[in-house]
Image (cartoon, rainbow, N blue to C red; front, top):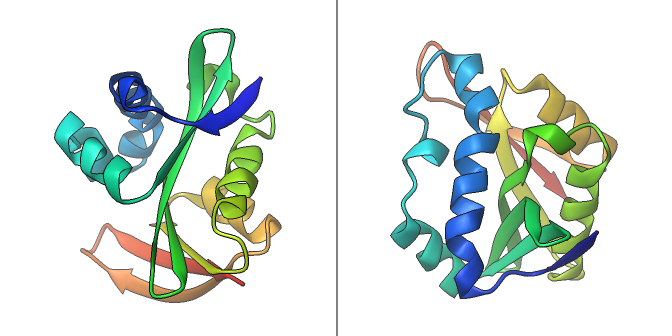
Length: 148
């Protein structure tokens, strides 16, 4: 298994993985219309062009991905995902460590929802701390975590 920078030609496969990986998040909200499931190839291409997209590959299949971009000394990390068949093997931690290496010595920021308890537990284990909350609706509260 390798973690390397994605290429433009990988974006469609990463988007398909995203649609699959975020089904569990959608189930938490009982809503199939969450932002990661609405993202288009054009949206992903824009993110690719302004930042870094990593892919985790086994054989010739992408089983994980994460992306980030830098602004004002902060690396904003997003869309950390692992194929559902490969979860709970430490791959998310590996992807997060690799994206941090792409932005050494910076402050790292990411967010998730309060319902994503497994994500919050993982991020805290990796040294991230909650620094802000934002209520989106009665059902949705985002927590923002930082490290560095």
